[in-house]
Image 1 (tube, helix red, strand yellow):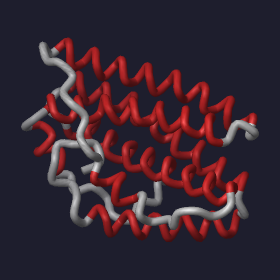
Image 2 (image 1 turned 180 degrees about the horizontal axis):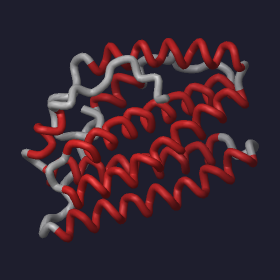
Image 3 (image 1 turned 90 degrees about the vertical axis):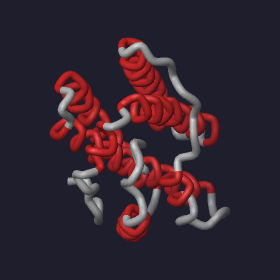
Image 4 (image 1 turned 120 degrees about the horizontal axis):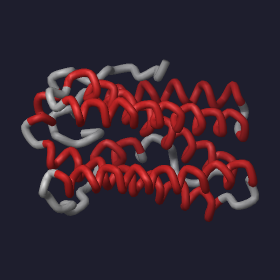
Amino acid sequence: MLGLKLPTDPRWVNIVEKNIEEILTDHAFCEQKAASTAISLIVSFPEYSDLVEEMTALVKEEISHFKLVHDKILERGWALGRDRKDEYVLQLLKFFPKGGSRVDQLVHRLLYAALIEARSCERFRLLSEELEDKELAEFYRKLMVSEANHYTMFLSFARKYGNRKKVDEKWQQLLDYEGDIMKNLGKKETVHG
């Protein structure tokens, strides 16, 4: 369903299990960044009323997810650590050239967001199936469903606002590019890395 070209090596879960505190901190910041992305789309493209409506709802959902993850951190006696660079996202951002029409810029941002959500969904599925901590596994199973819905929403908006044929071609190219990025990732206890 997700169309990802390179699945995450299941051994990534072993890395995560050695440092649950790190994955939860990284995950919390991913949720915060997702909320920020939705706000940024509202600010940048306010004329797309249907997008503004969906992004408003998404901000609320992503911030509620941030709180859920932060609560998990606190329940375990930890404090939210500091944010760190997301190598995955930094590499993804190199795919599309800067500039272009407003519609192109919007479509590109929607495609990035769709892919980030798709990869998050795939990673959360792995965590839900492989984590020994069953309470945390169930937590990730529930979040996986949300990520899948976000992925399809962003991709649907990209197809709606852009030329469907060109958007689908770009999506496939982006999936290929992301597959290459993933060859060098999966060695850290982070959601995308």
